[in-house]
Image 1 (cartoon, rainbow, N blue to C red):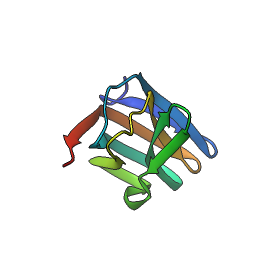
Image 2 (image 1 turned 180 degrees about the vertical axis):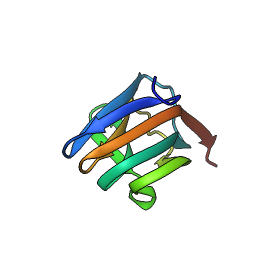
Image 3 (image 1 turned 90 degrees about the vertical axis):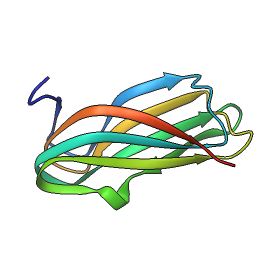
Length: 118
């Protein structure tokens, strides 16, 4: 832990896998992947990415382009949603950080929230 978070340094574009959750037991809900993040000299941008794998259907993603971070920032909350319809039950959820260029990011307070859909 560095500055109360995980330090992720990048020299080029890369995807950093943070967590995987096998058999999460969710369906017909809104999943929200949320973190606290701060950055230093991020080039290109950094954003959250959540992948859901569905048996027999493959993997699908949600990317937080709308909350892309560039440059140097203080601690702030960032999130990306994933909508699951009735019958959509992922057998694996992956939480990543995508960094599009050189720079440093710090991540803390990683969480996945679930809100039922009607």
